[in-house]
Length: 89
Image 1 (tube, rainbow, N blue to C red):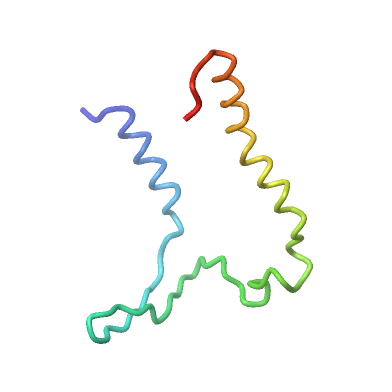
Image 2 (cartoon, one colour):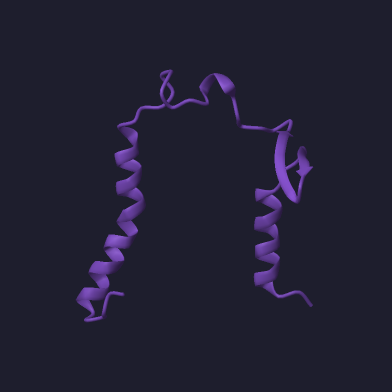
């Protein structure tokens, strides 16, 4: 019998890896491994929009919002811990 948590984790992995495919090339040189290239039919990389310094796709002011949203759960947790008299580590 397979544990339900194991089934859930497996389903998550299968979902996130659905489009992970392609080729990775390496060069071996004097005990080193050097990445020589990657290809995939599902790549998200697009050379024309790869730079954050050009184009209209990325606005640097958006970063502040992402940082605030990402940190919000940490702030709320800290507030709740203080309310409960727990020590912040």
